[in-house]
Every structure is written in C-alpha cells, then in structure tokens.
Length: 336
Length: 266
Image (cartoon, rainbow over all chains, first blue to last red; front, side, top):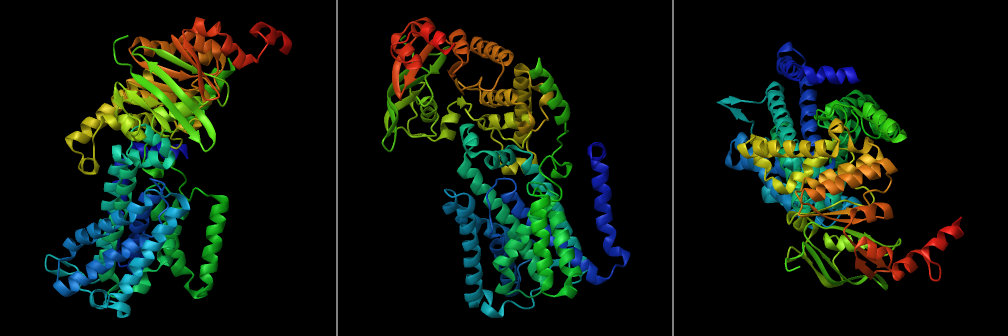
C-alpha cells in the first residue's frame, strides 16, 4: 500500500492526465449506448454523492436531505428551460445558486442542532421540497411532472445523445473535484474539518463555527442543485416521485460505502451501487435485500468505507505516512 | 502595578443548578506572568478557565482581557482577541496531520475565503505561505518538526499535548491558558515542558497554567492562585503558598501538617 502511495504521489499529474484521457475517449470506442447511459448515471451520482460528502464527510454534519437540493436544481432547470428557453449552461449556475439559497435557509435552524436532530430536520426539509413539487402545479406540473425538457445546446448542437451527456457529466464531475479539492486544501476546508473533529476546540481557535457550518451546507447544496439541472434533460421527464427521501438515503449509502471524508470514496460508492443496481436487475425487488446485506456487511467489516479514512492516498491529501516510524521513535523516547 | 492586567476576573461565579462550581473569584494576571492555578480535584479550576475563554457564561461577575470586557463574548471572538488555550482532556483534530492542526491555529491571522481558495488568488497564496511558515516555525521550536505529516491521533500522549500547545501558539496569543499541560507526561517530558514554558515566557508570552504537579508549579510560576470548593483560598508567590496554613489544610486535611501526612502514608 505504501508503495502505491509513493508511486501515486510521484507521478500524480501523469496518472491523472492518463485517467482523464481514457475517460475522454471512451464514447468513441463504440460501446453500446446503454452502457454509456450507465456511465452517465455513475458520474451523475458520483457528483451528487460528492456534494453530500462535502457536508457529511468534511464538516461532520449529518445531512439526509440531499434529494431536496437535487430536486430544486432539477425543477429549476426543467421549468425555466421549458417555459422560457433559458440556456442550459446558465441554468446550471441558476439552479445551483437557488439550491444554495434554500440550503442557507435550511442551515439556519440546524445551526443549533447536531447529530440525529440535524439529520431529522434535513430529512424534513427534503420532504417538504418534494411535497411542494408535487402540489405546486403551475410551475412543477404537479403529479404530472414536466415532460419533454429541452436538450442542452452547445454552439448550435442539440445534445440529445447519451454520448453528449457523458461529456456534460464528466465535465461537471471533474469541475466538482477540482474546485472541492482546492477548497478543502485552504483555510475554509481546514475550518470545516476542524468542526468535524472537535467543535469546541475549533471555536477556541477562532473558527466561526456557525458561519462555516452554514457555508458548508450551502456548498453541498449548490453542487446538488447543479447536478439536478443536468439530470432533468438527461432523463427528459421529471416528477416528484424521483426525489423521494429514498434517493437521499441511496446517495448517503454511496458516500458511506465509498468512504466518507475522501474525494474518491463517493465516486467509487456511486459506481458500485449503480453497477449493482443494474447487474442485479433480474432479481427484481430482491436486489434491495442484497443491497441491504451488503451495507450491513460493510458497516461490520469496513466501517470507514472502501477507500478508508482520510489517511488514504485517495483522500486527496498528500499525507506521507510516517506513523510507524514516529510511533517507534515516541516509544523509544518514553522508554528512556 | 498601574498597567492594565492582561486578564482580570472580577467576582465571577458559576452555578450549575445548586452546585456552586466557582464562587466569587477575583484574579489579575499581569503581563509577563506565569500564573499558576492549583487546587484539589473538583475545585473549579477548569470551570474557571472555561469562563475565561467563553465556553461557559459566568453566572455573575465580569472578565476583562487587556481592559476589554469579554464576559459575554463567544469563544471564537475571544480567540480573535488573542487568548489561546489547551484542554485538560486533549481535544486535538485527531484525523488531521500535525501540520494541519497547527495551521488551523492560524485561522484568525488569515483571511482566505472560498472564492480565494477556488481561484488561488494572491490572498490565498499569501495566507498559505504565512500559515505554513508560521506552523513550521512553531513545530520546530517545540520539537515536533519530524512529525509534521503524522496524523495527530497517532502520536504518543505527551506529544499530543505538545501539538495542542503548538496549535494555541499559532494564534499569536497575548495570553496562553494551559489546562494541565503535564498530565500524562513522564518526568523527563515534564522537565522539558517546563523549560519550554519558561522559554515562551522569556519571549514575552503571558501564561496561565492549571497543574497538579507541584514541582512543576513551584518551579515555573511567579504567582499562584489556590482554589478550593470553588472559592479562592489564597494568592501569592510560590513561597507564600507553600507556607500558607489554609493551603496545607486543603491538601492534607485539618490537624495534620504536611510532613506528618507523608509519614502517615508511609
């Protein structure tokens, strides 16, 4: 494991570049459209899970309402592009900002809450958003949903084939990872993590915990909104049943399965869950049982998730592990 | 004594329901002091610290930092006024590297916001440079530079205590409150910690320290406050404290002088 880490740190740029090129040429390899769609799904869920991970994994606030922010993005995108013909690319921003605003409102009462109480509040918020979507017929189409959402346009090119969406989702995922990585390695990211680790200590070091908890919530909501905007034309039809709390839990499962507090964890989690869902389709409803068993087994055997805690190289940080050496030294020192 | 005390408490009380944890305590810490606070277990020392740093609001009384009333301020505001502290039961950021722990200490000195971080603006670069340089300098002086990339939770206990002190120093404090810094350290580590604290004091830091290790307190502090059952027993130089009857009573019980107590215990 140590060797892999060293290797990764040494050739980081090259590895990432090669990975990116491979991802970029995949649609040209003549893979069946169905599989391209699956990959779109994976990347979409990876970003959504990543946005949740930015909240749960880095500031330690247990949000269960990501489906709500996702819904806001999707409905904003669908309604504005269908009724007013607003450009998809502009909507990405608008949807994200709107979700961020709602995220701010949700964060206000949750600032004084923590743990399970915060979770319940976010769960409630998510459900309220879904019910509004279900009943506010003039805007959201009510139970009928919104049909035939216009395709994104890219310099006059109608992007309707999954290959195009592949690039949209790839772009969003890479952008998300790039931006999040930068935020996490700055003063802001450190403040979030200090809240996750120990709120009282963070406060006594001058971290304005309320402010940073709120911005963290808004940050996660923003990306959920952005990915929601992209989701709407991809599936071409949205209604409120697509944004139930099940979706929120599903995304949470991806984060937990992959590894909270790591950048790569949610991507891996999204891939595993999406592939399993498709591969076990022949089992019909029974696949959920398998899925549940898998989660329980994970919690039992590897609670830190597939890629492990933040000391993993996949966590995005360059922590050269010197622990063994340090421990040996410390023990040697105290034995004297 | 005409100058404004760095930290001043005026008649502060803290009641938890019927329990009077701290009752009417006055204290003045002057610039350049190494101020010791001692007392038996449960005497209210940590509660007193928690009020000074804003974690608890006092039931009565007022607290002044460099003449400014900080009684009702939140801990993060007080930290901005450059009061730093460590905790009795280590409260490190365990899953972060030692360097990152200290970098968080630089939080109040830097101003990077999210846009700066995403765009890597000048401010981001300047702040990161400042945080890294400052942190490395502190780690160097406290002797933890070899462990900068180690996960803080994986260090030996005595070292974790040092990380906490390093983290507090990154705040560039006008006063440093240490809550039992020598707990869990062996004799050698305690000695080196004492030397380190005296060195900090020479550099101009004002320090307040809670400690049970009498040797440590008597050799490092110039003034000592004794608390017992939440009340101020006495205050004075180490020699005055050693010879004070009340203090001996509080520690060894009534009727037995210090020397005899040792004999009784064998």
